[in-house]
Length: 234
Image (cartoon, rainbow, N blue to C red; front, side):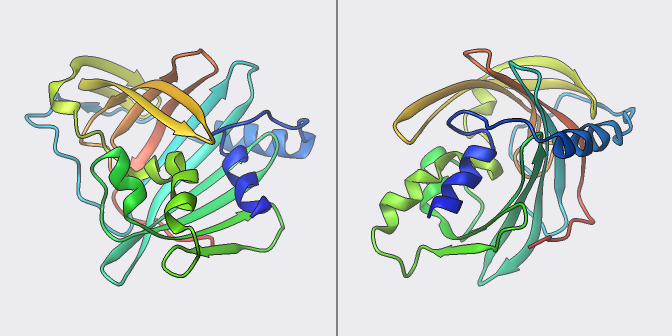
């Protein structure tokens, strides 16, 4: 269980960061610089229905915290099982390389549903062994699912996007017109996390183009995305 919580912390969801690892910093900065800036210009969408999940979809994102620490995160649909879908979060930052592979029974549409439809979580940090939680067989499954609330929502497109303010947003992945600006709040380990996210349905998996925490502790932006080619590292 300790390694599972380490993955959540390393994904930037709670807690304080450890000391910077110089090798990881160099590798992360090199990875961040490897992305070319696409010349996309996505028109405003006629509707805000999320793109259905399909194996092979992926997004790449860059997060920068208030201390200037950088993380590169890739979220991918890497497989199907028993009618559900496996999403994988591959994150490299100045401290760790973390992997989290999540099996959902179906594509979630709301914050609560993102937790309810969790079936399994597989996690790995650096060179440690992978660990698996199977919520169908473990005691206190409902309690444990809630500890993964933010992690589970990595694949969620806001259900309220159609009613939101619309703005044009430019990020390294391109310019996206008519993004829905949505306030998001979740609770992790008893701590409320508030943020603002800009969504566009042309982006697969979760539609996220840009995000900022309301306390100014981090920003996240889309580097690139695709609808095919994703594969698992776990």
